[in-house]
Length: 611
Image (cartoon, rainbow, N blue to C red; front, side, top):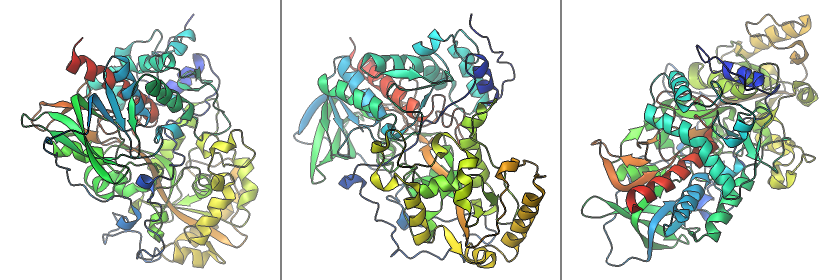
């Protein structure tokens, strides 16, 4: 007999407590967009940008631009892209280089699904990809969150907000979570088709398994020990399906412009084949844009997601995310949806303030070290709350801690926080016992071969940060205070109060630390780092309808153009720091990409090719 969960008045935290009642005692790893590493292809080889040679204002001088400290200006040289201008379409050429029914831009999670679905429904399909390998950022994700409608959940008689699954009830709950700023028709479409898209992927060869709490799904061979490259099994399977059934993949061929005819219809794509030669691809029926968002484009963040531009200190999507497809859509008159919404994890280390790169591998040792429960203060010296990711009786902590702590770290004055610890820090890590994507990577972990060699031991990333003076190591607290750019007494007084708390063995802070986490900061050298949000998804993007058709500023559909998330926006409304529920959207980020690609492929064939 299925468990019924009363949806009346449920908060976002209540639903996981309810899911525990529905058949699980713990949450293990619901994180849907954890980036690992990009293949070393020319299109993604921007890691040297923003090197130490870049002139950046010393961090000890300031951490804000305005006199009142309300805005932290990014170092534009640290970004791979810094252009918000629309990319205008090209005219129809005298001759086309390639012909197809549907051209899909991007071979990540969304693009692979869009191409596979289109070819399955009978479309002659070309898929172009900037990198040399399929999978994009989706292959690096950890879990695919979904609140109901997937067959594996049906077997467990699980659905939210109650069983049996009702997409209308889920839509009503989600709209309340999104403060009614989202398009209900679009949210209803995700709720209705999300489970179907995962079952369809299973039909194509993806071997799914249900998580311990049936609100998430992962590939069957993935490990629970850590999250690195879990979804690669899924993206590999979808690539194999598409390739076997006739999708013509063009790798190392970034799209540079759309092609529009005299009637205003999008009829093709221009690509830079092998990064050298422009080729025109004729898409007789539709172009589908599924190449991600713009996490790594400073100008687009400034313009469309100012809270992320202010509050995020880094991105961990190292593959693409420069916003070219979004800009192409703007170039043909597309409207924008999801203004000022994004998704972030905690522990965005401020590498770029020291002249380093903006996008960093999530499992970089310094990133993971920054996510532990250290003394954390704002620039006034006020302690900040820590959100525990250990699985407990309330499984919601394990999920929402990751995004909620990002908000806590992003929103203090100056939009930065400061972590402080002493020479004994390594002795405390095991006792912190943080789980999921906060788990530090060590060489003995299962499936460690999936991790880039440099990152298989977290110590390497920490040493990189010390060498770059991103993690500041000083012999005295006064030196550390000065070089973090804090006013005299701010850090030393905060540490003195912390040490008094540790000596008592009981925390009287409004949100107290467990006694076993109270470690005094007394042994030099002392360490400190500036942190903010760790951006993993832009939720502003091209406006689409529930058929995934791109809509123009005139309110009309742009003929021949479709977009999947995260090139499209609006999946969680406007003005959201972390895009709840489930860390980014109704399905989590990677699930949203999978679902969006499936919907794009289906709608493009049905709407443009008839029977």
